[in-house]
Length: 139
Ligand code: THU
Image (cartoon, rainbow, N blue to C red; front, side, top):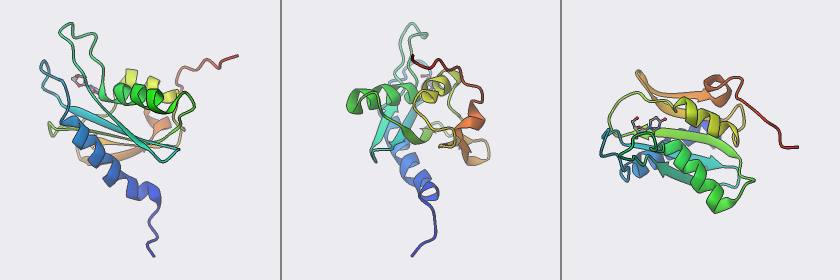
């Protein structure tokens, strides 16, 4: 029986899902094709890709499109256990600041975030990517 933890096994599966959905990217302006895959606490994997707009500013990133999709599919109680982000441009890219703040709403601080770094695939706990996220607890 393997001793590897589920977190060690996750990068391959989640990254593969992120890479696959990146092929659906709508990115005619940047040609930067991004995919994100979320592992939810209900066991589901939900993916998203970037959808650009001619106004540029209305572009939605892969990570935020995955979060919107996860809530639409499974409701407001979703919890994110792990995130993977991939691009098809063979370049380093961690989730942007806006996406980190949106992920913060649904993710555990110690959830692994897997992304392409300059020296290969990197996994970091979410809290290291966004310490001190803005929070406003609903009353
Ligand atoms: N992009 C993402 O999808 N995720 C990120 O975290 C950063 C950037 C997209 C937005 C845009 O379509 C393209 O990458 C170039 O910025």
